[in-house]
Image (cartoon, rainbow, N blue to C red; front, side, top):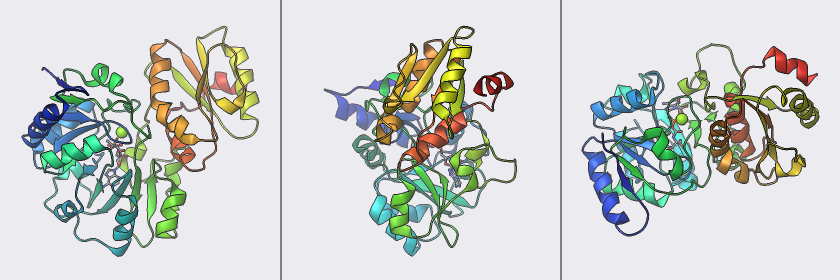
Length: 349
Ligand code: TXA
Ligand code: MG
């Protein structure tokens, strides 16, 4: 199929109108948000929702976030609005906080993957906001990557991933945060973070008081028990060709360097480090500054895609502090990393 591109500059406004009309009428539109690019469909078009699953290769048991531009739209989605929801929406919407709450029966079961909840967020990105306003229907939108791959955080990455598969692709340049929204479950007595993201746990606690972090939300591999967020079950964000190994904890820097020395002659190996790590051997890539985790989150997924396309077989990455956006960054790195390979374990000693 032919994909229409809406580029910045002259004609953008008309292009956006065309995309909104198409979205409303059941087409699929790839659009920028402040977190990552999304692949959107009208929530009232079951056929379009199913197309999202099929294009992404997404498992049917993984529910999709509904995007809105006006708080009133929650009435079509949630059974009611609790005081805690009110406070969170007041403080964080529009912005990268997704709230999971009990759904109305009328919400398409494909969007919610059969759960009794539906997740909702109101993006702050002005292009996303305008698209949603013009479409004037709530829009279900997962991240616009193929299932399991790193999310798309720049317009330049959209064509290779989804060109020819969707109706419209809208140019929004590079996404501000580069990691997805924070997913917060507010169905219980105390809110629970299911996925750390662009809104920090610390800032949510300032508004909601006691907030817990789901044990699986830090990103380490957990047992196959029933997880509240189906997305937690799958390995995610992984480069296609390269294998990523993450070094965190005691003497992570030294362990990683020793590993690099041992592997580099045998396999094409890159290191992904922070500016502060003072590592500058060949094939070293700086993720950003550990002092400002947004400089890391913003480029993280693009870095993984870049290293993959550069033909590296092994990526050794240094972990960062789990403060602020660092928690989301570590969740993504852990989930992109491979369970430790015995060969690498040997090098780590
Ligand atoms: O920033 C974002 O959230 C981006 C942009 C496009 O808005 N979207 C995004 O969607 O990251 P996706 O589909 O890649 O990730 C949504 C996550 C999944 O882990 C999914 O399992 C979880 O949210 N989720 C969605 N609805 C849920 C629900 N009702 N209950 C629990 N988890 C839910
Ligand atoms: Mg995703």
